[in-house]
Image 1: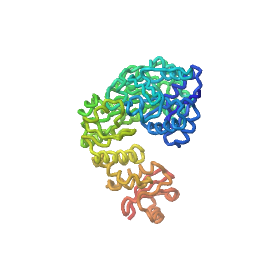
Image 2: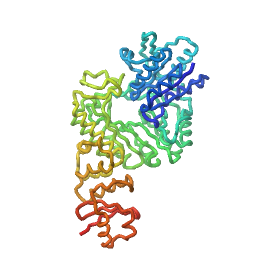
Image 3: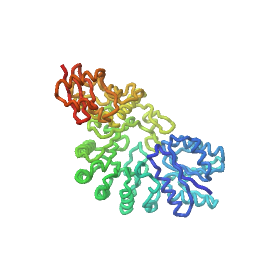
Image 4: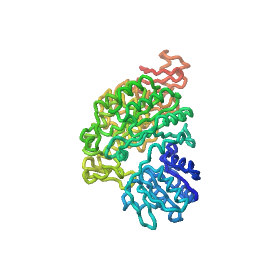
Amino acid sequence: MSIVLSSLNCKYIHPNMAIRILRNELQDHDIKVDLKEYTIKQDIDFIIKELMTYEIIALSCYIWNIELIKMITRAIKKRDNHKIIILGGPEVSYYEEQELTDIAFDYIVCGEGEEIFLDLITNLLQQQDYQHEALIIKKNHHLKINTLINKTNVAYYQKYTNDFKDIDLNKQLVYLETSRGCPYQCSYCLASLDNDVSNISLDNVYDKLNYLLDNKAKTIKLLDRTFNFDEERTNKIIKYIIEHDNHYSTFQLEITGDLLATSTITLINDYARQDLFRMEIGIQSINDDTNKAINRYQNNDLLFKNITSLLKSQKVILHLDLIAGLPLEDYESFINTFNTVFSYYPHELQLGILKLLKGTHLNKQITNYQYQFNKKACYELQASSFLNQEQLRIIKACELALNRYYNSKKAHIIIIHLIKKYHLNAFEMFVYLSDHLKDIKQLNELYQRLFIYLKDEEDYQVCFDNYYLNSNYRLKPLSNVINKKEILNKINNLKIIKQEVLYRDTIIERITANKYYLRLLKTKEIRIIKIN
């Protein structure tokens, strides 16, 4: 029987590691299997046509692809009901019985699937029945439901030293496990359902790191839910990466900010190359009542002390996360959380709306907090007893402008300058900038929205500097300079800039009626010139 392992990824740069591990396991047992990866933007008919050429179709299901997978599996079964469809992944591991009728499948593997999947495929090839406590079976429209979420022994899945052979290491993200499970119980997160942390042996981790560093993988994301939960182990891995740095790769780590040890910060600040590490810290909220309600115990003072230390050294790319819509955090509280976190000016600040994920403890508290949310993936919050629809709309507007102006690095310097200088409310500023933002296509239009905040010569210079940092050439001017040649001639008469410099690719922007910003591309100078 022909077998395919498949997934619909968000983008080409995000390969699926789960189906590679399963493929390697089957191939180690001399079972022929193909691997087919698609993106959620690809033509669905093309995907169905390709998958229909196989007899056993195994699909990896996540929040971003489940609705498409439902369409694909229904279409496959409608065309040929004898096709065997196996589903796995976090999105199908926690479905209620009534929800399973909406999905066309034969088997669902709940939880980690290395051992179960191999046994299931082996029995299917031998045309034998197979049952397991973590396997949901649909046969003749009847369901056999089991409640176990399977966990694979760490010794079983850590044996593969190379799961990366068909990944473009220069263009795609590489995902690497050094542990599974999370020691915390945040009620909104699926990782909280597995508090048994299993460490892959350091020798195995080092083998994989050697392969990736030797082959110059560009971006390596460690999948550990809390990379720094064990100080000694964390430091050993970080030290190994520093000592074997290829001066090219970047490592992304998910860490808990207030748990970050001084020894780890010192190790990175003293010895790591700049941008060798990118740290992602899920702050979510600084409201103590909110954190208590979601089973998070966060020391905000220590958190911000560690963030300050990391930012001061300029060694680490720092990405911070916030979630709007958590229990007990109303509109004013969230604005306070946003403004407080933004005031540290991380390299990136991600603002997301709460998603009520299946299986989480918070999903079982929907009525307690009057949560209204989209019943289809990605289950985003629409209203609650703490945030109404209009307040959520405004928060989303802030998110849109935050991404376009700040996280994109297109206007982050002028944004920071203005907020610091005039003590602006960052949240309100981004909400204002979001107006008509969806209709703005050109970078100059993005910047012209900022002009309302510019008050003096310094502001204009910072604004123009930041604008032209994006590109010295082919950017439309921000101000209306209609007589450029006449102005250049007047400046030339001042005899302060050499002619061959002045008339060679000079950018001019108007600050006031008789004051101009000049960017001299030949000498890479910036001048403010007043013409009487």
